[in-house]
Length: 215
Image (cartoon, rainbow, N blue to C red):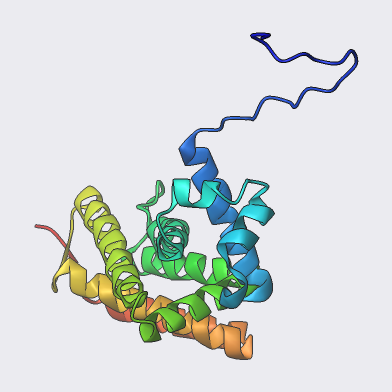
């Protein structure tokens, strides 16, 4: 008996399977999930559709994520890192407290205005998470993470500029998150940029009154 299978002359051999790091595959699946969310809504985000969009075998999904809920959590985490966390990153330039807060809120709004379909899809995902027992933890987690990111950035900014908030930083962060979400949601409904800018200016001015310079 031959030890090795015989190959016909000229027969094609299957190309070796490409092995990609798991982090790279995870990111591909996250990006594909976000694209499907934006284009077709939450119902379109099936494991098969996501892997197909990412150009990966279907079996790779559960190699990267134990459940579809875990993918949704990763999508929300990706969104947090690109919105609130980035929007309120301590600036390199020196701005007044009001200017810094206003710039942060405007940055968040600009992300929504640049990608409205994506923002609407993520709102849909969050709304569904509130009603789905298997996903309810995601909506609470998302809100908590938003506040944690903004709190950390406010603390860093205040320490760098030697400023002090007259209320706990976490409370100021929660207010900023509420304003940012509210302004973006309103803009998605009416597309009124002037009204959104007025709301941002008012919120920044209000929170700035709660900030003092350390003696």
